[in-house]
Length: 370
Image (cartoon, rainbow, N blue to C red; front, side, top):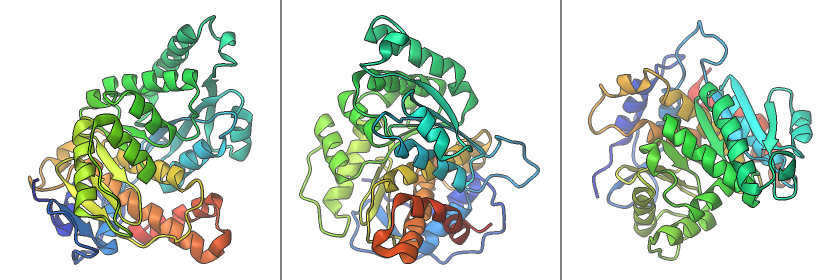
């Protein structure tokens, strides 16, 4: 296992990716938290904040869309809230535009949630595909082709999974869209049912060249590990053990070098070589929708760190600096955790995902500045 960079190097690396909108104060970062694996480094809240602040887009003047165009593929008859939370979290973090591709039945609901989202009712399911094509296979081909042609060239990052459902037609479309995005060099974020899709096709993201992030909770993490043959030990209570971080590293390698964000009391972020632990405080209440919010926040940071010109500036940093997607994941974890903490402080046990969504903007200011 290779040695991971210090918190100070992480902060310096993300500063090289994207210049900050406002000056970033120097941070004295120290390693904190429970004993990490030999290849991991536990990052303080202050260091995560410095990393997030360094991922700001360039200063004005800017034009609409320059600070991030996001596509979320998800939303079904049963699950309308998940793509809404992911899309709005991306906008609240600072993306300019968010497209939602969803099932036709959920489109009016999501549009009613917010006029800020551009909603495309392209998805179909096993009961409704016949208005598109005579067979499921032909429907999957036609719908995925429409999305890949009409929308993928217009965005900077694709989030697949929030509210998608496990319907065979919806999953078939999502899998083809993910493959098309990887083929175009677009970064992909998989969450929720997108991770179920990945357990069925573990090689799906290998063509991404590492430009992908998966965000499993513990249950999803275990199923992914089982799908690719990564051995697991019982999880340690309230910490990220050496065995846990080693499993996340191996999962990343077997999926093709993608960034794994294993969500928990401590978020484990790894690309198989560099492993960081996000220990920033968060809410003790884990209501539904928080993972969708993290996926949306992450999408914006990924769009910023992989935009044209970002890679060239980061290449001039130290060879020990973390890759852009690892820095993006650490920044997103810091903002999402702070938003949840603020939501709980305001609402306590009655906190729901919408309360956390409303705190994303304030959390971003606290972590990154204006």
